[in-house]
Length: 190
Image (cartoon, rainbow, N blue to C red; front, side, top):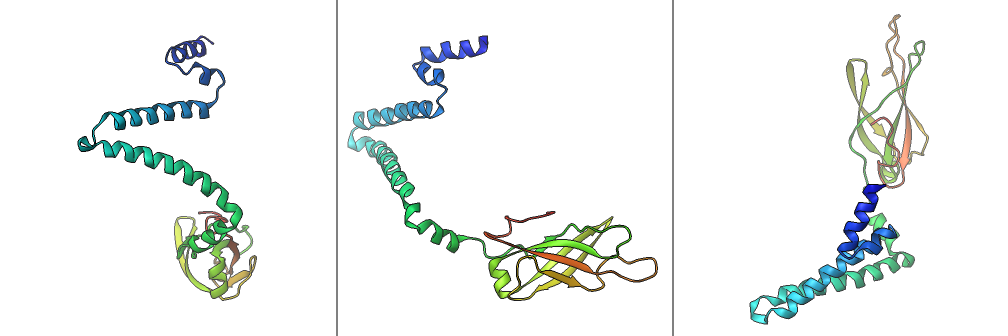
């Protein structure tokens, strides 16, 4: 309680008690931006053109143009350009090497895991290296993703599952997950 009172008293003496009393951080930000702008203006007006005053005016011009462009850019998403830019600049592929955490019951020789790909990789196909940690060992497989695969499809790798006591090997089943904007949407077990 006393700590909050001290902060209000200290900041009131320096001219921003109203900002703290309202707990409005944007008001504090505007206050300090106003001080910065005023200092830039005073330095620009007090320096001769030969003395480097042009740099102060450049600061002011950059600040004002940044505010104007920010207002313009906030209106642009309504125009649809943001979606087109996002499609052009989005990541088209997932990493070639993926670590997959598999699940299996004790009696089941089959292993189950998820592999994450993008829409482009689903459309055109891809080749991935799959690293599967199992106990103290890791196993590395080359997986070919066929073109035109759908979300939720299951890839079966015969004989790549767990080896049982009788010598039989189970299969590795990989559930295909297709992300909207790259591999970060549906990463499981990385």
